Length: 117
Image (tube, rainbow, N blue to C red; front, side, top):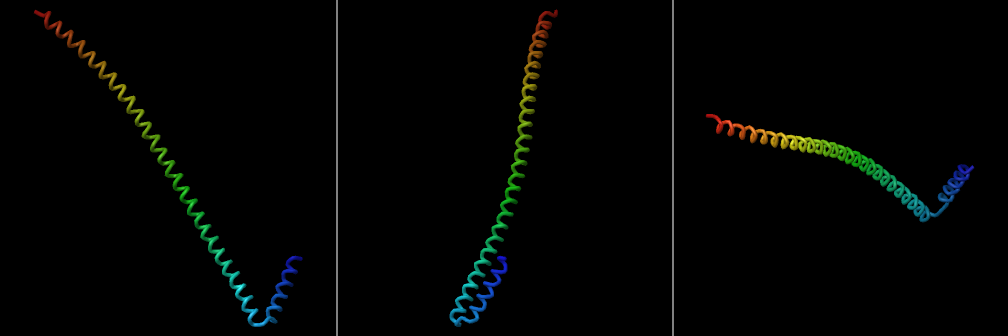
């Protein structure tokens, strides 16, 4: 129903346009050209917006991937740090124990050396 009304109005406009003086036909043509240019401008703007959206989505995915990679590196570095701290604690304990053993053995050696004829 609406389509039929629209077609009738378009047909009446075409008839009225054909009967209008040349000056009025130019105004209608200019209005039509302006509308066509606005549609084209809007289409280009929509295409640019869609392209910008794709770029922004791609940038987001790259940033998320970089963040995940950085988090993995951080976790690995933290794990290495914890391992290094444990190793240092063990090395300190071993060094302390070895030094105590050395002092004890050295003292016993001195006692034997002094007590030996």
